[in-house]
Length: 221
Image 1 (tube, rainbow, N blue to C red):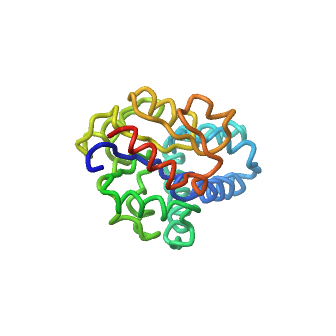
Image 2: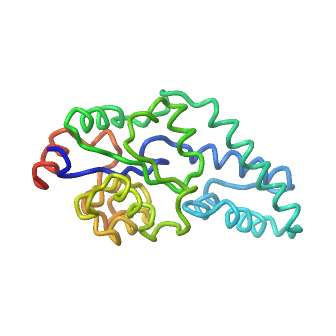
């Protein structure tokens, strides 16, 4: 099975759920500025850069600030987010992930991380998965956000694999679009109606069976 196929995993919503910590940090920031921020409004920030997220937040609160003050708030938000991340443990690995990674390792299938998060190595370290990944491509390595395929193409390069032999596991529309743009096999995690452009969709990572993984590997031998 060696070198016949490789996997590239997104981080948030696939390996762990750190979105809740981003939401808490943004909500607390909004509250400190005198307005509330809801989970529904938080949907506008998904897959968006930290700087752009702050602009959206300030627009919701109808607040105008100097560039200097904005930088202060960005630092404050990130520090709070990291305070949550630093308390993470292996208990926060999403169901099915550890079994899936162990299966890939046992079958000599390489895998990488492809995430926009600049904190990806820290998060993987906190949950005890850092040493399992062959390669990591995070927000420090890319200049273009998903749906641009840059993050996944870099992942394939680091894995020394042809993109067409790579399988991407993603939970976001932009991530699936990026995988498809890279000519990779896309597996969506979440709602099949939302992620309809993915080659395969599973409700959550625990639904990806070893039988499915075996068939995927065999098909690409």
